Structures are given as structure tokens and as C-alpha cells.
Length: 395
Image: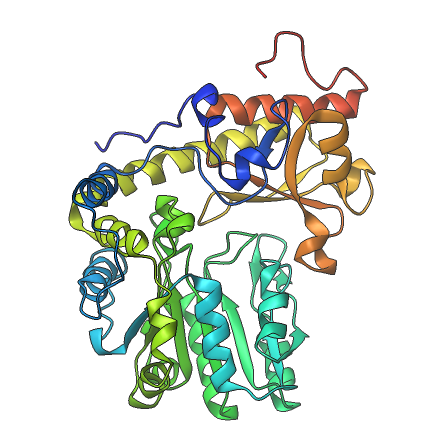
């Protein structure tokens, strides 16, 4: 059985200088931004250490193994074989989204997003000159799904693109192959593009049914683009590397015609790390990470049930982000503010994900069971009126 990936000790984590560990004072448990607390995959560490040792710190090469490494990874993990000719790299997924949007809409055209959704989506649409068209996810009672009728209405009224989050952030929803296929057919019918942010795809739990958008059929191939990266699963966001993927002659031409500078923005360390992350040598590490995250999402469910029974939480199918509804606690539209102020736990503000985020928080459980337990214990103390930080709690 694959070994679990174990989070680093808190004292060691506090030596990090990234956003997660520098935004707040040392007494705050930071569970807000999407960084994880695990050591790097050994193959990734080895690739970066070798690059530093030999001074491999120049520009990214116009010929690199990145596309081939990702295609092989996608085949092993998703049963999908993307065309190497349809891939170009750039600095990160957000940049890839903006560059594609700029070429599939004209300024002032509307772009469908599905809130509650990753907050930068709203800004990326605006950066590309578009106007956000909100079509919220449907709450089925058991989970969330795309509102295909709402999307159809938006496209019929003139929206020119769909910015999809697959798997979805913050809910962790893995959209079904059937709903993705239906979305592709709607987009093809109306002649609009679908850009699928699949950054959380490698973190889909076994049996979740994750399907790459471009793998759903001919309609998706004609209208779709995917933007992918190793950065979320392997904690490489600061190294700057993502891939834009297209599957048809027309969409591949769009990527080919992007300025060369779009590709040159790829980080050399990001590319080297991504190739190592996508290699077969890292598969066991990723398996172990998924086991750890599975246990953590279940631990969080048990802790909430015991200490915050008013909270509404559905275990995500992918990722390490928990979308938690605290409305029934009566802590206002943005409960993360009180939690930070009185419990010294930093969570992502729910309203940042759209109006649907009122009363919600997003919690990052890509950490140790001890930190998750301490965080929920602190938050629960607000409910009872006790001291938010129990005696003897680790700082």
C-alpha cells in the first residue's frame, strides 16, 4: 500500500516565507490560501536541486518535455491522450485563462461563471475585457451541479464564453461526464468557447469520476480549451508553469497564434518541477497524498459533527478545500472575520466567492490532523463562549 504523505511540523512550516505563512502573525493558524503543508515529492526536489547545482536557471527552452510529460500523466490518471501539438505553456492557469479569453471574446461580451467560484474568476474576465454573467451552481441537496438550463439561457441571450471550474473550487465538485458533454453541446450550438480550469484535477479522489472537459466528445473538442498545472497537487504555485490545451484544428490555431512571450513567461524552475511531478516516479507520492487528503476530509466531517453541529459541510470529491456553511451559527455574512479576530484561525472569506458565499467559509485541510483539530477546537470555542484557544494549545 502506498505510504501516506505526512505534513511538516508546525515549527518548520513557520520558516516558510510564502503567502500562507507570512500574511498573519505567528499565533494564527493559516487555513485560507491554497497552499499545502507537505514536503515536495522526491522527484520534484531532486529536479530542482539538480538545476541549482548545475546552474540550470536560464530561459525556458522552445523544445521541452513538458507536453509529453503531461500527456502521459493524463493517460495514466484520466484515460485521456491529449494531442501534444495542442499544448502551449505559460506562467500559471490564471494567465492562460486571460490569454485565451482575449482571443475568443471581444471587449464588452459576457462570460458565464458558476458561483460560488474561485474569486479571481471575476477579475480574470474583467482583465480580458469581458463582463461576468453569473449562473450559480444548483444545490441538489446532496451536492452541486451545473445549471444547464441557466447556462443555455445565458448563451441564448448573447454570452460568448463559459469559464468552467472542473473540478470546482470551492465546493470540490467533480462535474459528471454527462453534464460536461451537455455543456459542450450547448456551447457548440451557440458557437461559444468553453475554457476549463482543471488545476485541481490531479487531486480528484479515486472513484470520483473526474473527466477532462476535452475528453467528453467532438463538441468539446470543437469549442473547448483546458488550462492545467501541477501547481495545486504538488504545491508549486510559486514556480510558475501551466499548460493551455486544445484539441481541434481551430482551437489549436488560437493557441499557436498567441505571442511567443506568453510561453516565455513560463518559469524555468516551474517547467522542470512540473515535468518531474507528471513523471511516473511521482505517481506513488500523489497516491499517498490522496490517501492523506481522504483521511483529512473525513476527520474534518467528524470534528464538525462533534463540535459545530450547526455547520453544513459536504466532503469534496477533489482537492483539499472545504466549503462550510456556518449560516446557522448567526455569525453574519462573513463569519471568517470573527473567526480570525477571536479564534486566531484564518479561513477564506465566503462572500469573496460570490453572493452565494454569504455565511460560508473555505477551509484548507491540506495540512496535519493536529492543525485541523486545533482549528476546529478554536472555532467551536466561539460557539460555547469559552476561550477560543484552549490552554496548552500549540502556537
